[in-house]
Image (cartoon, rainbow, N blue to C red; front, side, top):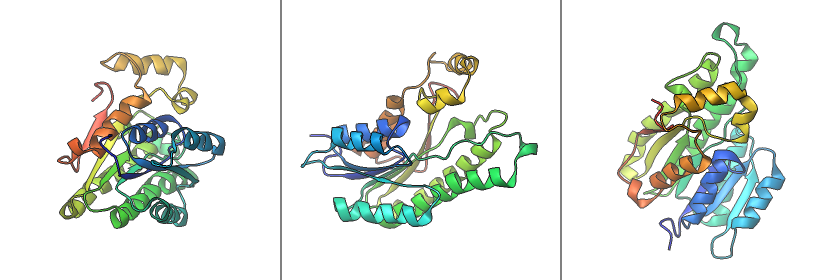
Length: 247
C-alpha cells in the first residue's frame, strides 16, 4: 500500500515535464490524481489512460491558469468527481518573457503577472479554502528567484511573489494541520528547457551544477512526494531548492 493511499491530489500543469513526473509519482504512491493541462489534450488523455483504474481514478481538465473562474471551476470539479482534496501541487507556469529590465513592456508585465502571480495566488486561495485539514500545498517555483540570470527579471519577480504568499499561507493554515511549501528546481531536462536554451547554455547549466548534470523531472517529483507524504508533515513554510547543489 502506497504512502498516499486514499488521498486525493490536484496537480496544475500536469501533462508534461516536471508536472507530469509529479502526477506519475503521486499516483505511484497511491493517490487519486486530478491534473490540468493548457493545450495538449492528446498527451493529457493518454496519461489518464495509463494511470486511471477503478480503484484509483485519474482525471484531467483543461485550464488556462490566468482565468480565475477556470481555476475555481477545476477545484470544484476535483471535489465533485473524487470526493475531496488533500494535496495541491501548483506546477503550471506561463511561458517565460525574457527582457532586460529597461525593456520590459506593459504587455510583458501583464502576461507574467496574470500567468504566474495572479494564477499562483488564485490556486493558493482555492487550496486554502478547500484542502482538507491535515493537507498539503506545494508550489513549484524556480532557482531563478534566488540566482536570477540577466533577462529573467520579470519571471523571477513573479515567481518570487508567489513564494512569499506560500510562506505566509503556511502561518495562516498551520492551525488546521495544513503544510504549505515551495520546491524550487534548477535546470531540469524538459522539452521547455531545451527549446529555451542554446547548447552552450545547457552546457553552462551542467557545469554550474555541483552534481554535474541536468536535473530530471523525477528528481523534483521525489521532493514533492516527500512533502506530500507522511514524512513531510513537520515541514512547512519552507523553500526546498532542488537544484543539484546550485545555491
